[in-house]
Image (cartoon, rainbow, N blue to C red; front, side, top):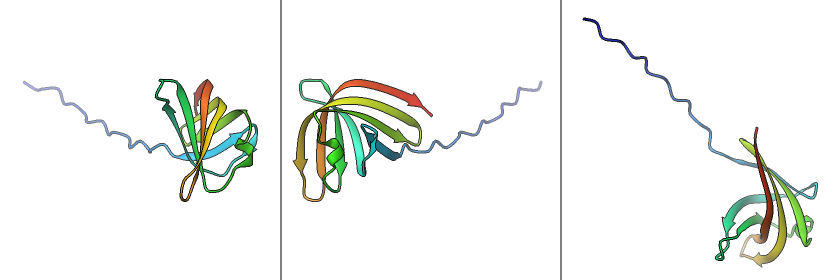
Length: 103
């Protein structure tokens, strides 16, 4: 006679992931954004955009600590190149170590 009533569960609105901070070898870097991508030869790379020259990124090997509102990412990278864009500086690193932790 009676059918089971199903309760509708409210879906939690998930916040979008937002960039919080970046540390390079323990030094805070004023970065605009970062992206983990792949090179044309399918090796992972890290791209970091800054407004000005970031001297903490001028090393052959850098250990990064990237923090977002959802997770902490630890990346080790070897410097590949730096590109001057019109308003930004783009630093590209080849990734050799990657760890990700959810906060």
